[in-house]
Image 1 (tube, rainbow, N blue to C red):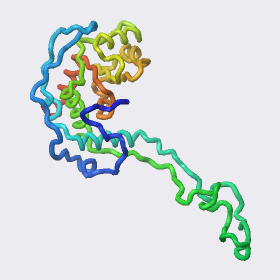
Image 2: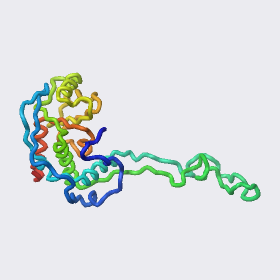
Image 3: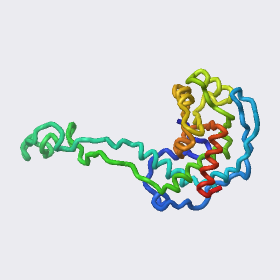
Length: 248
């Protein structure tokens, strides 16, 4: 998955928790937002049918890269299975008998063959299964999602389509729409206002294309794709969510 060019360089390494994820403080603004963006609305054939006026500040008052980093790392940590395990010296197969007498052989003293310093022995500090998941304040997580979308608007990485629907699932039809919109050949997040089974089934076999309704978006899914394809209704729903949160 290709990260967004303007935001997530260096986001993908795991790091310890920060004060931001413990307190949920947004802190100082890390990047400014344009006052107004005029997005072209396309139809199925890729032709312009209008414009969509939106201020990125309608979604987020500013872009805080540190908050975005913390939220992305949290989602990645929560995906970890934590099932890795190695054997200690008591768990590996082998006798506990001393290999040879303590003195008189000229060799270095040694105990059993299961010792951690010998080949085939147990790990001295054996790794045990653990839970890597943790949580952050809900308000901070939702703000990070809106910041990620606002950053896509600022970086001109969003394509608006008037309507996206299919009578029956058809991958070929979806491929044709993406080519007409100039979105083929790169990682893409397709966002609809609600769950549309036909759109999902039409796009699930296309490489590097992900489909998610507006209500299921998060900072990781938004920033994982190079570009974002939204329907007009999906963008309206996102603006309504931001207004309901009192941020517009």
